[in-house]
Amino acid sequence: MTRSTQEWQAADAAHFLHPFTDFQGLARKGSRVITRAEGIYIWDSEGHKILDAMSGLWCVNVGYGQQALIDAATRQLRELPFYNAFFQTATPPAIALAELLAEVAPAGFEHVFFAGSGSEGNDTVVRMVRRYWDLLGQPGRQIIISRHNAYHGSTMAGASLGGMSGMHAQGGLPIPGIEHIQQPYWWEHGRPQGLTREAFGLMAAHWLEERILALGPENVAAFIGEPIQGAGGVIIPPSTYWPEVQRICDRHGILLVSDEVICGFGRTGRWFGCETQGFRPDLMTFAKGVTSGYIPLGGVLVGERIARVLIEKGGEFNHGYTYSGHPVACAVGLANLGLIRELGLVERVRDDVGPYLAEAYASLGAHPLVGDAETCGLMGALLLVKDKSTGEAFPEALEIGMVCRGHCFREGLIMRAVGDRMIVAPPLVITRAQIDEMVALIRRCLDLTLADAQREGWLC
Ligand SMILES: *Cc1c(COP(=O)(O)O)cnc(C)c1O
Figure: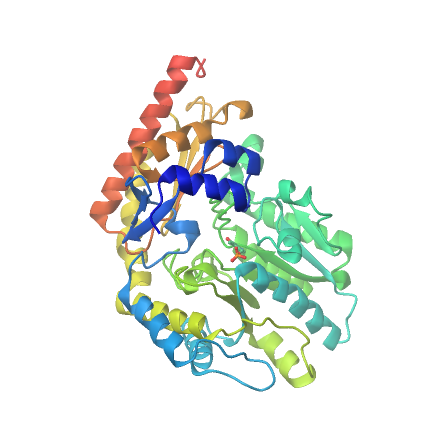
């Protein structure tokens, strides 16, 4: 199917309603049509080569064009393209992937519930934690606490768990029984009060305890969080935060859920983000990197505390999806996790490219526009500020992040803007030389943004 870019754009505008998109705005501007990819690069229909520093949507962890994944899908499509896991049936790839996930997960995770996406995984979490407390004779424990600016997906439950005000404003969200506390974002809440990051981490964790006590612990089922908030702008919490959250959940008997949809499978330099951040969840949601995005798959890793109750006391769990344990998706998952192991990607992020990116980001921190430069594994964030010495922010209306992102597109770099935070999460296969190339592009885009700011008088 070869059509001109204009033809693709016209058909796109006429028929395709894109996710998280102003339909009219997109139709006016025309979409960028991506036609192929290899390694860490994508190409658009005009032939532009672009460095994909966002791994698609945080998912293409092994990079594009990996033959092992392509072969696994092809083989499984021929052998058995679909069979379900309802009614006491199973397929070999789903069984083997459940087994492998239990192997790579931290101790105490022996069971997996499969879904088609991260959102469906989090819907499963809501039903599972409430079911757990019902079975223990504590049906009052219904409330799940989450954070503002969290992202947990776009289904009714996923968007409710998430803390994106724009999403809550549409469609009658959040659903009942979901509460939100402030996020552990030092620049927003800690710095204005003159707190060190460590002291702020403890304070942010105590917001959870305050809310639990206000609601009554007997009404609280679980706390859910991303080890590092992704879509919210790569918010890396102070090192004191998660261990304190763990202590608080333990003290009140509340279940702890780690949404590992982005942080899982090596992104932070460990198999799961909770290992990097130092906590032991009861449930872990996964998706994205489990198949490196080659095909949709998500689910929940279920810790023994919950699995035992569901298995021994639960009877039938009235929940599941047609594609829970889809054999082709699971075959790709198996090949993907196999490749991550074979290439040693988790250790590589921890010991080699992760520290290398951290060094490069330390140097970007010296740029006049950058107020803060942080990384964890292969996630990185740059905070753009108007005044480096005081940390003063640009007026929101300038949309400084979007200005910078515009330069990135033109220069051949996919970097995402979340407010005034510029974020990256490149494929885990990225080499040191490619990190140099990415950082040079970032620096160039920062320089171009600075030139705009000087020319337009935004700095004074
Ligand atoms: C992307 C994401 C989700 C939702 O996953 P989908 O596959 O888009 O439904 C959930 N949680 C986190 C942390 C995510 O980044």
